[in-house]
Amino acid sequence: MSRKLYSILSLFLLAAILLTACGGAATEPPAAATEPPAAATEPPPAATEPPPTATEPPPANPLAEYGLPDYYPAEYISVIEGSQQEMETVSDGLLVYSIMGESNWAPVLEAFYAKFPWMNGKVTALDLGSYEVFERYYSESASNARTGDLIVTSSYDAWQEFIAKGNLVEYTSPEDAYVPDWSKLTKGMYSFSSDPMILIYNKQLVTSPPTSLADLAALIAADTETYKGKVTTYDVLTNATGFAINWFWLKKAGEPGWETLAQIGAATPTRQSSAGNMVNAVISGEALAGYFVSAISVFPKFPDAEPVLGWSYITDGQPILVRGMAITAAAKAPNSAKLLMDFVLSAEGQIAVSKGGLTAYREDMAAQANRHLSAITEAVGADNMVYFFLDPELLDQAVKDAFLQRWDTTVPAPSQ
Image 1: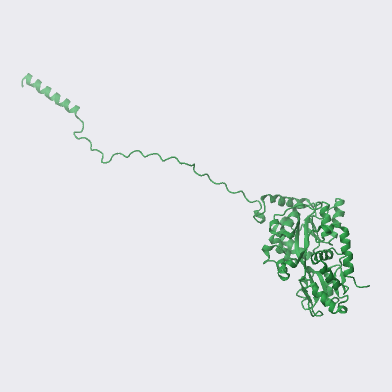
Image 2 (image 1 turned 180 degrees about the horizontal axis):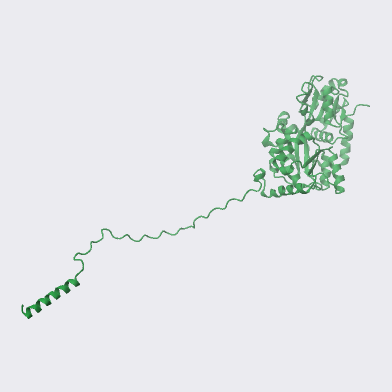
């Protein structure tokens, strides 16, 4: 091959190599994507309100562990804590001056101790005379000696003097809205119970059982000699309960009531210092009948006395002995006294009161009580109920003296 031809072929080969090197890309374009790429998602809209925060748990009820009703205010815890402290520092605990015996108090204190264990065995409830509770308080408080923290009695003349002297603590119980108006005698003074004063008679000797004082008066008028000295009642001149019963009964009955008592007075009733003496006299036959007798001395005699002892509510005016209850200004354990008072006024406490032979009155536990005021009201009628109350006239000594003098003449004692 000539040199010229060889040079041409070399140049052609070099050009082919260079062309191949520069055109090494794929001879076909890449396939188009079958779906367009997803558009970027929009950010979620901002919340119009911030997410709710966790709710705070309600504060614990500080009274829950003591089983108190929901209507007790939270600040009542100060009474409970005060009572607990008192029982650690007051050596003789809670002292009560009352006119009830151990059997009346036993179920009340048993239930009270079960509810408030730190009070267990720390309550002393004395059984004193209606006036004695105040006489003892005045004497002890005057010398700064230990005296009653709580008083329970039915002598309303003495109660009003006690209040006038500033000795009553004005306290509103959490139970105040749940007890009837007549039981709230004044601020800080409530009724412990509502006990009837009744008629009793010897069933074997009295053939026409009386159900009213008018009935008893008629029996005496028909056979005065048989009943002479054979009727018994309280001595109004010396017994505070007897005085209060007659005062309030006559206040409601008026002059017709005085006339009825005059007819009974023809029998020259035997005057007694206690209901127990009256009951024993009727059971033994020493007396044929008794009137204005405290039911708490009668009912415990049954069923043993059933063959002999008869009784009736008084349909022409049923006295209801309202046992006033209040905390004293000289109390050394005032918080514990509040605790006991509030318990007595509670539904649970009123049930316990009825178990002790007294008459409960709180309306919401009538079906649970052994004895309840509703049964008395049903028997005699609401208009014939005679409640004790704080009567301003009792503070007038001249009025009291005139009343006692008239009663003494109207219901004379047997001649000696």
